[in-house]
Length: 104
Ligand SMILES: [Zn+2]
Image 1 (tube, rainbow, N blue to C red):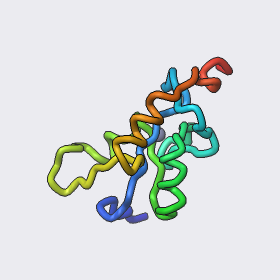
Image 2: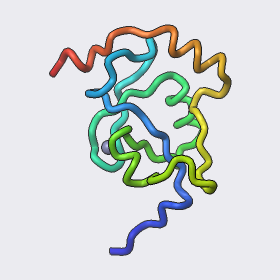
Image 3: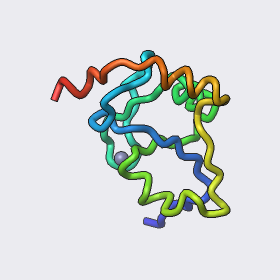
């Protein structure tokens, strides 16, 4: 089996559901990491990004380093799923305890 060319893939980095202590209020737990298969939490901006970029692959914060070794490399196009700083701020300010965490 040949290794897929990771260079052309858009990755949506998401927090593992087990790792997040606080989540944005309207976050969903409907997606999993494409590498380890663990449940991730997607904030509303992440859900929208995924809809707008159906080819994007979801990767958790722990597997991220294995596919994107250096986030500061010049060929890494890093951006937040939230389209504006205001949206990011909004999501960061409206948090609730992660209900997934108390299940374990
Ligand atoms: Zn993972």
